[in-house]
Length: 305
Image: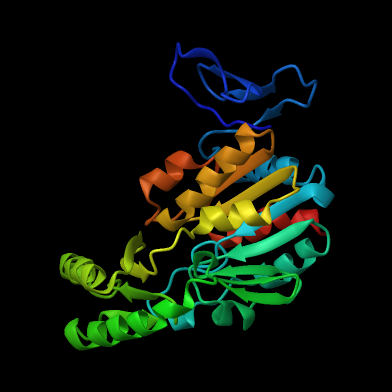
C-alpha cells in the first residue's frame, strides 16, 4: 500500500484505518512506510516536486513495478487532450493515443474514464484500451459494448432538456447532447455562469436529472449511482496497483475509490493534471501533479520504450 503525505509539523505518526501503513508527518517530503509487511518503502510527494522529471520518476516507480497486476486509468479532456472551447474539436496530444495502445499491451488494464460518450472515445481510442464513457453509463471492456441497464429510459428527458437549453440560453453557450446526459458549456461566455447554473438547477428539478459540476460547464445526468469512482472500482478488480490520472472535479470520485482500494491494501497513485483551471480540491486530493497532457506522455512513455 502506498500513502502520500505532507502533513503539518508535529502531526506525529498515524496508522491508517486498515492497519497497513504508518504516516510520518513533519518537515519536507514524507514517506509511506509499510507496517509489518516488509515491503519496499516508496517516497511519494504530496504535491508537485520542483523537478518535474523527479515527479515522473516516482510515478513510474509505482506503476512500473508489476505491470501484470497494474491498472492505469486516464481522463480524456485535460489529461490526454488540452481543454478547448469547442468540445468537438478536442484532440489528444501527440503520442498520447499510441502510448495508451502500447501501455495496454503491457499492463493488466488500461482504460479511459471520461464524461464523453463512448462513441466519441471509440472514434479516437484503439480497441486495446477499455473505455468508460459518460462516467460509466456506456462502456467498452475487452471489446464488448455495454450500457447501464437503467439509463436508457432517461434518453427522452435528456433530449428534451437539451432542446430547452438550446432555446433558452445565450447563443455562445454550447449545449452538448450526449444521448444519456448533456453538458452545457459557458467557457466562451464566463459571465453567463450564474445564469447557466440557475437554469440547469431548475431544469434538473423539472426533469429529475442530476447536476454535476465540471470545468466551466454543468452536466445533467440520470440520477443513477454511477460515476468515475464506481467505474474505477469495477475495472480494478484483481489489480494490486491502481493509478488514476485526471484534472477535474468529476475525477474526485475516482480518487476516493483509490483511497478505498488503498485501505484494502492496494498500492495506489492519484495524479492530478495541472492547469490554470485545476480545482484546489483536485490538487489537494492528489499524490502527484503533472503539468498538462504532454507531461503525461513524457512521464509514462519510458515504460513502453
